[in-house]
Image 1 (cartoon, rainbow, N blue to C red):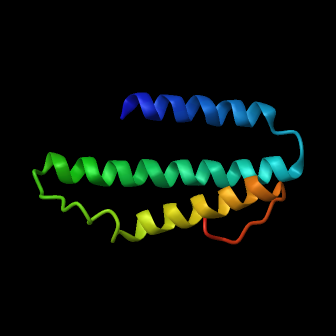
Image 2 (spheres, helix red, strand yellow):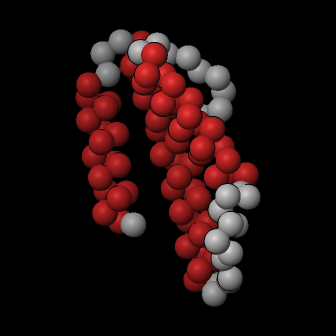
Image 3 (cartoon, one colour):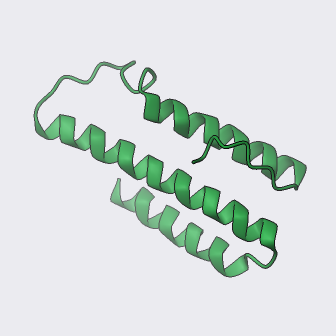
Length: 92
């Protein structure tokens, strides 16, 4: 997981450097929030694993944080596709 986190952190930093418009900076805030949500879910799963709790294959799919992450990801993808900043509130 550390390799993925490091790669995501580097990519987020590059995005920060490349952000030049208000829309870019606003979108960067949403990307940062998505990164934070993913880190929170990762920590939640690792904590359960350390406690030797059974994690069912569908437990993540039923998790409200995972639903928030997926909703935000769809919103970010729509923004990337349209080229327009639109905050629908799903990443907050």
